[in-house]
Amino acid sequence: MPARTQSCASWRRPSQLATLARLVGTATEQLGGRLGAGGAGTVQSALGNLPELFVALFALRKGLVGVVKAALIGSVLANSLLVLGLAFFAGGLRNGVQRFDSPRGEDDRER
Image (tube, rainbow, N blue to C red; front, top):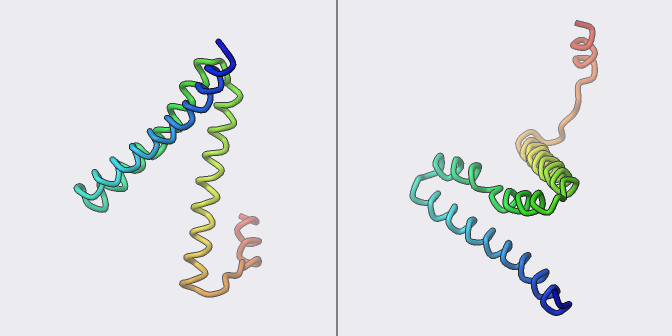
């Protein structure tokens, strides 16, 4: 494959993936608007990671198992840290400064 064609292909694929992610996001929002809050959450959880699935499938076809593993670990860590951070933030807004009660933790450890 000529260098120019290869360069063009390597630029086109990420842009196509970004377009696909935008399309899936827009479709999810529109479908969620028709289904209400509960339906929107269900649709978002089902289709929210669809672009990541496509990346994983393309990487597996090329034999890039390490890339897929790293992407999955990164996705899980990012989502976990996001939820944990939001929980801390919301707890701080509601309860003010949060403190860890260490004597209670020691009691649980003795059981």
